Length: 596
Image (tube, rainbow, N blue to C red):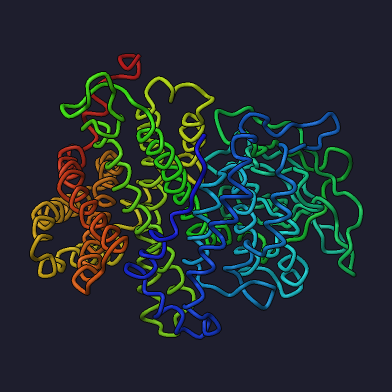
C-alpha cells in the first residue's frame, strides 16, 4: 500500500477560489481567526494524518477490532496511541465553540482537516465523526447543565459519542423503533432495548462513551412523533465530573463487515442487568427526531466527505502504481523494454476521470460546508436563509453523489492495478471495500434522491434549484479564450436540468420517485461542472497574473481537468433526462415473479 499525502495545495485552492474564507472570517463568530495561519495549519494537519493515522489503516483492516468475552473491545495495534496523539494535538476541537474548549474555526476549514483524516484512515475517522454528531445535537438542544457536563470532553475527544437510532426492525424507518424510556422520580429515565449498527459503540480508546439514544416513553404517540432523545453514558458521571459506576449497557456483538474492519460496529443492549440503563432526556419528550434532524446536514455532509476522501486515497495509490508498473509497449518504447502503464491512453483516461471527479467533489463538499457556516453564523437574516437553502439543496448531492462516486472511483483504482488490484496485499481493494458503506450510512442514497425531489426541489416552488442553475448560466460570459470550450456542454446540461426539474415538479408520486436517482446524478454533475468551470476561471487568472514554475503547472492542470470534466463527463449526465421523465410504469411492467 502506498503512503498517503494530504493534497494540501488542492484544498487550499478550493478554500481560496471556491469558498470565500475572507468573508467567513469577517463574521463575528470567526473574528479571532487569522486567515494567514490557515495554510500552516493545513500543512501540519497533513503531516500528522499522513505520519500518525495513515500507517495504521492497513493494520486495522487486517487485525480488525475484536470483541472479548466480557463484551469489551480491543482495537487494532496502534489505534490507542494514534487516538491519544489526535486528542493531544487538538485536531477534533478545531471547528467547535471556544466556550466549551473548541477552536472556533469555520466548519468548512474543519471539513478540510476531516478530509485528511478520513483519507488517511476511514475506519479511524468514524469515531471522531460520530462524536461530532453528539456535539452538534447537544449544542443545539441540550440544557446549559448538559452542555457543561458533556461538551468539553466530547470536543477535546477525551470522551467519544455515538448516535443510537437503528434497531433490528427499524432501519431507515426509524419511526418503527421500540426501545423504551421510563421516567424516574429523580427526573432520570431508565432505558431498555437493543440498538444495532452502532459505530464505535464500544472501544478502548477513551474512558467514557456518551451514547445519544432514541427511545419511546410510555404512552408515546406512534411513529416518529413519539420518539425522544436521551444521553446514556457508558459510565455515569458524578457531580464533580469524575466517573461513577458503569451504566447498564452491554456490547452483545460486533458485525463482521466487508470493510472498515477496524471500526467496531456494535449491537448494544440497554438494561439487560436490571431496571434499565440510566439516561437523561434532551429537551422535550416526543422531539427526538426533530433534534436529530438539526445535526443531519452535518452528518450527511461528513458521510459525503468519506466518498471524496477514500476516492482520493485510491487515486493516489493508483497513480503511484501506474508510474511504477511497466506493461506493454508504446510506439516510442525502446526495443526490449516495456512502457509504464501510465503512458497507455486507457490508463490515462481512468486516472484523469478519477482526478476530475475528485476535484469536483472537493469543491461541492467545501461549498456545502461554507453554506452551513453562513446559515449558522451570518448576522443577516436573508443571508442566513440563503445559506440554509443552499445547504439543504447541496447536502443530498454531497452525500449521495460523492459516495456513489467513492465506490465507482475506488473500483477504477482497482482496475488501474490490474490483477494486483484484486490482491489484498496491495491495499487497493481495501479502499473499494471501505467506501461502499458510505452510500448506505445516514440514509441510503436512494433516500437522498427522494429527499431531493420530494423536499429540496420544491423549495420555493423550484426557485432554489432554478437560482442555482442561473448561477451556472451566468458563467458563460466568463468562459472566454481557451476556456470557451467549457460552455457548450454546460449550456446543454443546464437546459436538460431545467427540463427535468419542471417535469418532476409537475409529476409527483411514483413518477417522480422513479426518476429521483438519475435526477440527483444530473443535478450533481451540472453543479460539479459549474464548480470546475469556476476553478478553471480562477486558475486562468493566476496564470495571467504571471504564475511560473510549479505554480504555473498547478494552475494549468486545473484548467485541463476542468475541461475534461465539462467536455467528457457533463455530457454523460445530460443523457439521463429520458430516465428521469420516463415515469414509474417501466419499473412495474414486470411482476415481482418476473423479476426473478
